[in-house]
Length: 199
Image (cartoon, rainbow, N blue to C red; front, side):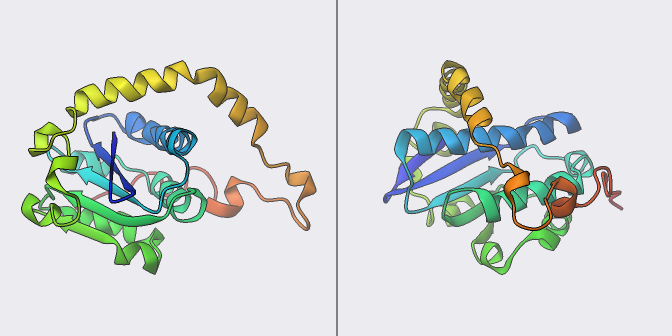
């Protein structure tokens, strides 16, 4: 879900799935949601990403692929047409260091400077006004379950436009000066470092 405050927007997500494939499938969804927000609201002065780790287990972390993490952070830092002014983890877990160990190798300094971790929501409220948050966080915005239904319906209603967008906005590598690039050039060979064993 997302909300708006001080002419900026925040993006909220919560880790709810236990299946590794489901975790990796969320990345295209982020791209679609970003694109749809820009289609609806245009470019905003800034965005905050908020990830609630409540209920997250060490098993979730063990299922995160390094390649998928690298691709997501590359997209966030190099390709997403947003100005990221905050990346917040709330309800952080005792093994937060394991999550950071996955992220840090692929984070630029600019992302590190806007990364915040909160065990106390009162600290988080200093960055995002409480009344702009879902009701589960004592805010005044619709509950996350309702927001999920709303945006899911919006994506379905605009399915044809998304398919047309995907067809129209593709890079023709034959026109690139010099050597053509593919996913392997950017991220390495698919399958490398697929899973990280956590002690």
